[in-house]
Amino acid sequence: MYSMLLTGGRILIVKQIIAISFLVAVAYVLTAPATYYKLGKVVFGDVPEFYNVELAHYLFSYAAYPPIGTAPEFAHYQLSRTYFIRGQLIAAVKEAKKELELYPDNKRTYYILGLTYGYLELRQEAVLSFMQFIEAYPNSWAARNDIAWILFQSGDIAGARYYIEPVATVHNPWVQNTYGTILLNQGEYDKAKEAFLIAEREAAAMTEEEWGSAYPGNDPRIYGTGLSAMRRSIAANLALLEGLK
Image (cartoon, rainbow, N blue to C red):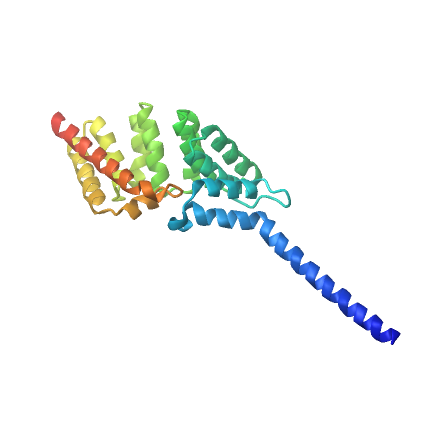
């Protein structure tokens, strides 16, 4: 009888251990930084219908500064991006730098750093950040387009052309509009018109979703507005060119 009770007690203890282990595992999954990071990505562009930058910011904040465990790679990077979208630029710089401090091989972070510095009008810092990004991703048309635009705004037209020309054969409206603007300012009107016409054609055929794919993390509801603004910019450049010829 005693041995039967002992066996029954052991079975009960084993069941309790299994139950506790299960609860611990569930609690870990629910509180793990990686879980919050993955959920953050879902609402920050991976599933456009669920887009919610405020919720993404909360989730990435938890992932980047978890009460237990360590921040996964790109947690501070994604948090930086949510700060950028929300217009909190100083905080965006801080989080990008934190990402590079923890994970210096995450060179992609230099892109958000360059963008943020650009919006802060810290052009030298923006150029240096984009240069580091381009060193890691030399064929990135987006980074070359952005650094070219910043250099152009700084008055360094030759530098802008130097960075945009390696991707000048990329027929998308962003590159061609920037390239055309640079050529226009260097007096190469025929080549500028060619670039603007390519930009006009590509922008006319572009869908809102295609425009939005170049701006990950932005609210899908602004895609139409952004695409329209780009088309107006190209049309204005073409009109300016015709007025100069």
